[in-house]
Length: 407
Image (cartoon, rainbow, N blue to C red):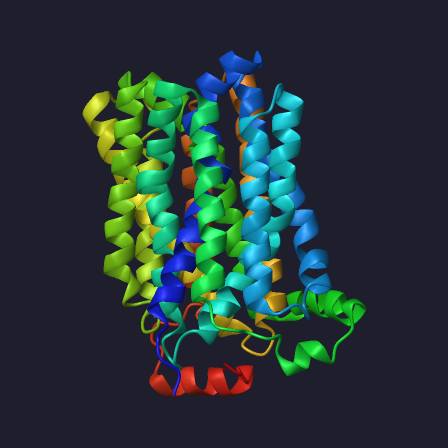
């Protein structure tokens, strides 16, 4: 019987911590990067858009090309690319080089997130894939709790280049730890016998699976709204609560801390009652982010931001676990298209946010985020096949038998 491989899951979580922090770090350092490189804050926000576009376009073909590579080796290579790209970003002499270094990271990003879910499932016993996913996704929460606030504080104190360099070093350490703790995970037999072209076709055809398509629609809808507002959280809270510098860092810390607590609390329900819990989280997001539209002052802004952070940070655990559940026999392909949907959400949201901020319509961002969160809530309500109200142990065992996972 497979046992929950906690050391390997912790290192995978640490790697996800690095990736999430690096992708979103410009959110906290918009003013510093803007001032140092002489570009507008709105243009710095487009760093998220360009990153997401490259990740979205490259995920499916690169995942197909690497399908026969042993999983333990592939995940280590993606983290190594991360470390190299962050080093280049820290040394970037201008905005163009900074953008190109992030795009290098984006190429590895999609592959990393496509394989981390299936790898996590192979490190867990039947019926505990969601629990293992929640453990790995603690790295995502910690990125918001520690990564972005710490990077923001370091960037404000010692410069944004120092902050980026710090995470480059963390990525290098992550590569070493992955090599040391991950067991050998060869490509599954079904992947070894499939050509790259067939893998590409399978990844595209997986969208014909109604449950996968519905999951991707829910993901893109929610994430577009979230990142339209979250990318510009610094100017939002500066407008609403007068928070900047240390105040912004403290708020981002609180945003992530509440998310970490929420992740821990709801993580135990991922494998049992995903539907009702996800609906509750989305309802909280709708209410909380909507409250940021009017200028209500310091305390209401802080409370609404913390509720928003707590609810949203826990949501990706349910989305990622659903990928493994709705397409157990094609987890890599389903994960690839899910990553594309998520990156479309990030890039689309950041782009829409940039357009609205450039048009002096900052206050519209929370309304957009709340509206799309409400749409996502309704989609989940009417998608019980994707997010069931209750999942039995028998359901888990049937899914694992269909996946034919060979540890």
